[in-house]
Length: 282
Image 1 (tube, rainbow, N blue to C red):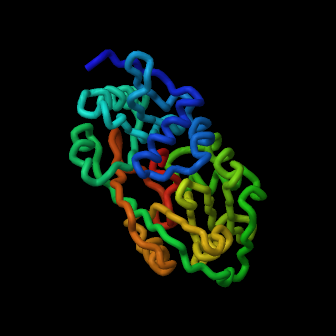
Image 2 (tube, rainbow, N blue to C red):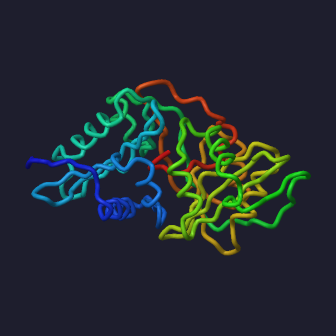
Image 3 (cartoon, rainbow, N blue to C red):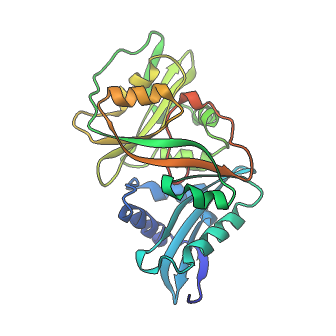
């Protein structure tokens, strides 16, 4: 194993990490890295040998006590030589004294357990061309452009479903070119929210929240356009979300394990999460 240098990714290397993830078939959003970089600029690490990038891993810090691990990739030609685990250890050091989450492929669960990660649930990716009509909006609920909602209200609603504050990320996520966001409002309070973004193969929805009956369908009707290929990552502990995905004619195409280390699984409104934001940043 040649000497490995590890340092924070440059802006150009963030784009490289996105391409590596695409090469793995993860289908990240086209503009994901703009928002990702805003979340924790020091949290995206690249390993280099003789100045050439050969591996990467991210550990994004949220608030004071939560972090999320992703982009754990070694290029195929250097796998099995210890470079990946070196990046892994550097990211764990970056996230020290925090509860750490990750979404990993199911067949790697045993390896993650060796680092102290415990299984919480699985995410199932549902993909296809959905059969979505205009539907009916529940009485008293208004569906609006998410960018029109006061940001403090949006951030507070997101905090109900996510373990820590993430205003820097969220402010970019809802406003990136090509992203569409929809919020459902009742009596001045949010009861639903979703963001759709373009990928190389179609579109992805996430986050996708609903905290009132009938709202999930109304949010999706506001987000989706006819003839659009879509995918979203559904927590398998949310039976209503799985039922909705199946009712849209979508099919399961990928599965990964949500796992946590460094503390218990965070307590959030899991029943209201119809799709996670991303598998890379939680």
